[in-house]
Image (cartoon, rainbow, N blue to C red; front, side, top):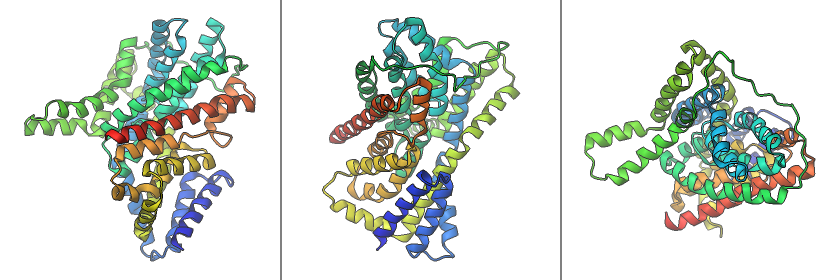
Length: 439
């Protein structure tokens, strides 16, 4: 009976979000409380479970997500993202412009949230299209594939960071493995698949306008822009790799590395550096930079609430004891846990549209199996992230952003955008399974 309650809860969650258009946080809250009652959690214990669910997940990742949003907003507002794009276009030239845009999407996509990155980079795609007279979808899809992969696979994006916290994975290791998976996924879904789309006709529209920077501020240099935008990545990689290169470092040095390597400290260091290099140094006052940061927090308020809602659902599953029972049942299934996690995430993604909701909901279901089956937590994070990108269609805002901005028919949007997302997802799963052989 308990399993039927969990399945019904997931169905109700999906219906509330996709059919009745209820906000995802409220849907999580309503379904979690209803499931708790149905699963026999005492009524006087349910409020405590709700509070613990929120605190357990938000305590470890709020700083990372908030600081990451501030950095991304500053990268966009300062013009650093545009500088990175210009540098890549100059470096690769006309013949390999696809690859330049793809790398730009990957670099810019690391600090920027998906929606901001999309609106920021699509005008660049059309400027290249108009300049070189090339097909827009053929040129633009590799950049957007890279942007999508960073959103689903790589910290400091909200979903991967939340999954790292839920599964108690190492953020630096997850980032390194995610980059290993991202490269083949982006290449196959981007430049290679885009070759089949040269004949897709598109018409740019002005539905989304990028806010231009005020001329009174200086634009950061290309090297400054690149270093400031990617500093968190290099810091995380450094503090992850150094202990392996110097295993005999002293206790004090190890303690310093551990402190610097804490994800929240990494993001704080990167933000402090960017505040000067992309803000103060370019003529902005501290007050103006802080205003940008306040706006960034407003942008991610609902994302934080969605993550909090998923924490409530997970806590209710734990409190009721159903998580352990489900783990025992799932262990008996003739399906690898990494495939099972990807499949659950992919199904929820197709039902609700949101990659973040899909990954976090799937995490609440698959989590008890990870410890019992001995699955590498970083690989499970990436498996759920890959599943959450599967087959974007009409219930996903990204689908409509792509369709309307490129002026495509529904058929061509499915053929280009939806297939691209599916390729990214499947290649991500295959890469996770390959890595699981060696890790």
